[in-house]
Length: 339
Ligand code: KG4
Ligand code: ZN
Image 1 (cartoon, helix red, strand yellow):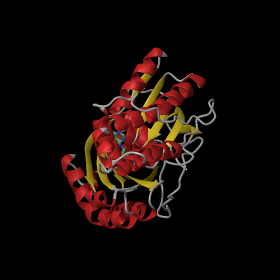
Image 2 (cartoon, rainbow, N blue to C red):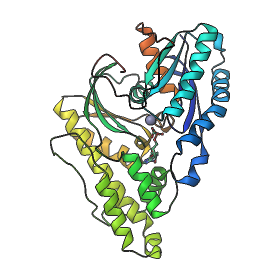
Image 3 (spheres, rainbow, N blue to C red):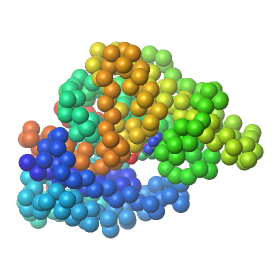
C-alpha cells in the first residue's frame, strides 16, 4: 500500500509517502522562512507560499519514495484544524489529483496526525496511552483508548505551550520561532534563577493556561535593563522553560495514572524540547510509565503523520468524497476517528 500525505495547516508545506502506518518512504518539509521577520505566522503569506511550494514538495516526496502518482493507493490530506486559507491549498490540490487520477481521498484531522507520529516513531506503542500534543497552536491531553478512538482530557484555555515559547522569545528579542532558541539558551542557565508561576488551575483537572506565565515574564523583563536581560538570557530562558515543563509533566503523569495508561506519547513541535523529553522520561520511569517521543522531523508538522493516519483509516474502509471541506476549528472526535 502506498499513501501520499499532505499537510498545509500552518507554515510548513509538507508532503510524504508511507507504505503503511509504520513505514515512512519519504518526508519532505518546506519551511517558510518568510514569517521570521514578522515574529509569527502571517496567514495570507503562508497560503501564498503553500501555493508555490506544494507541488515541488509532492514531486520530491514521490521521487524520494521512487514512485509516481499512478502508483498511489490513496491520498491523505489535513482538513483541519489549521488556518483556513492554508488548509484550502492542500485540500484543493489533493482533490484535483484524486479526481484527475481517480484515486481515493481520505481527510485527516491534524491532531490525530500528531498522534500517529507516535505510531511511526515506535511501532510498539500500544493503546491505551496518553498523548500530550504540544505545538504552536495546541496543548492537549488525549486519552488514546485505541487507534482512532480518543477521549479529550484537557486543552489550553488561552495560549498554547509553543505560543508561550514564541511570545516570550519575542519579549526577550532573541528570535523566532522561540522554542528551539530558548531550549538552546536554557542549557547554560539555572532553572532556579527565578520562580515563575506554574498555573495548575484545578489541581485534579487537565486544563492548561500559559498566559499568566507569559505576563509574569513580561512584568519581570519590564523591570530589567536591556543589558541585564541580555546578560541573563540563559537563566531567564531556563526558568521560564522549567515552569512550562513542570506543568506539562505533572499533568501528563497524573492523566496517565488516572486512566491506568501504561505510557505517554509527547508529540507536536514543543515535544522537540530537550528538557521536556528528559523530565518526562525521568518522572515517567519513577511511576513505571513508558515515555515515547518521535524524532524532531516527526514532531513538528509533517506529511508522514498525515499519511500514516490516512493509511489507518483507508485500510479500515474510510473514503471521503469531493464534498469534503476544510474545518479550521476541527476537534478530535470522542470516538471513531476524526470529526
Ligand atoms: O507542531 P509545530 O511545527 O507547528 C504547529 O502545529 O504549531 O510546532 C511549532 C511550535 C513553535 O511554537 C516552536 O517554538 C515550538 O513548536 N518548538 C519548540 C521546540 N522546537 C519547536 N518549543 C520548545 N522547545 C523546542 N525545542
Ligand atoms: Zn501541528
